Image 1 (cartoon, rainbow, N blue to C red):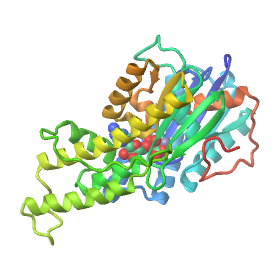
Image 2 (image 1 turned 90 degrees about the vertical axis):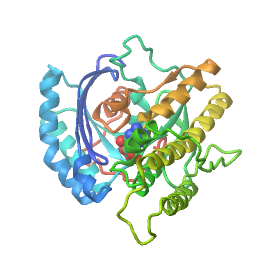
Image 3 (image 1 turned 90 degrees about the horizontal axis):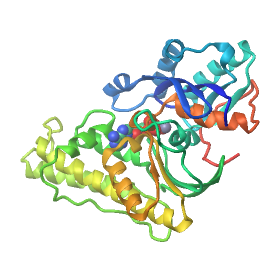
Image 4 (image 1 turned 120 degrees about the horizontal axis):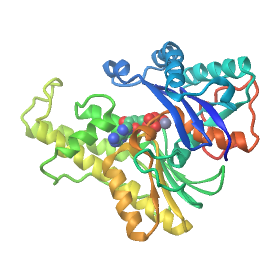
Length: 355
Ligand code: KG4
Ligand code: ZN
């Protein structure tokens, strides 16, 4: 893995990321232009708006990465870019940008699976914990993002076996939808986490879908339960059914946010630990935007420690979408000899592990 410097581009969803990563591990620069403020008024991502924003911000993002990195084009060995899964229009901006860079600078181009990026983010150096070792294989991974939720096991480098995943909504999607139900700002994940932390009462209990005997998840029932619980809470608070403007009292929102988060974290952590024991994992890895959640991180860290299995989760800003994780996966694909042509196309649906 040594001796590679990869320039990586990520634009699959609503963050424009450019990074320079050495040896698939050391981050020389990682710049993310976030579209959160842009999508807040609509309470969700409008694909066309996202694609235009990538176009607007990708060049300034690259410029800032160069000024942070202290290296030049002659040092770069390859250009890596997310080619899927994600929003087609958003992906195409990054892909065409990366193709142009690779062509002009006569560099190899590597197409990267976004989910493999989330996975290999755990192999990046941690500035807050420089002594942390690379995760040992076999690694059991829980990847939880806005679009995906699954468990996989990596027994050899770049070989990932899918164990199970959500049969309906992704965990992040559930956070976002329930956040909106509770009248919290977009995106719902961090807003629910903040509200949950301020909860004083911890009585409410949301249902858990265990789907026994599988490594699958289901979050749609939880969303339906949230709809019902929020309606009940509004009635109890004396808010008229027709009144959609008056918000629930803050302490009620906090308790419901806590109850929802507790149910999601309980299911994710319990099933991850079970799978890790079953496959004889040497490491448990957590990745994807929802991995930024403090309660989930703490719960998995505690349970993994009790079992004596090392647990690795990237810093929160490397869990949400960024270019560095694409550099981590891209460097491994590059070192393994993978090359994409200038006909590289967007793959909006591309499961981890599929060729
Ligand atoms: O990986 P990501 O940045 O984009 C996708 O690939 O989807 O994940 C975004 C998701 C959103 O649903 C967001 O609400 C969620 O991650 N998220 C969180 C937190 N931070 C981001 N969910 C729970 N707690 C958080 N602290
Ligand atoms: Zn992502």
